[in-house]
Length: 68
Image (cartoon, rainbow, N blue to C red; front, top):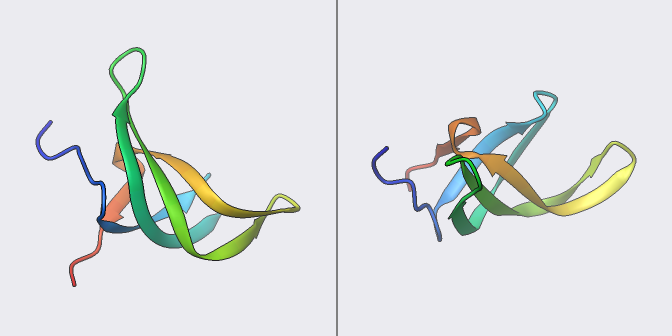
């Protein structure tokens, strides 16, 4: 897997397949078992399952880096 460290990059993704979000990666890490997860601070808070969230975790394959 190349370029798995996305810290500082703007990304978009679908949280649990239902919530489209855009934000900035603040931490990229390898989890137990080898999966890569990213902590993403959202551009604006989103109401998700009845709770307002400003930070979410995504698996690497669930985010897309935005250019520009």
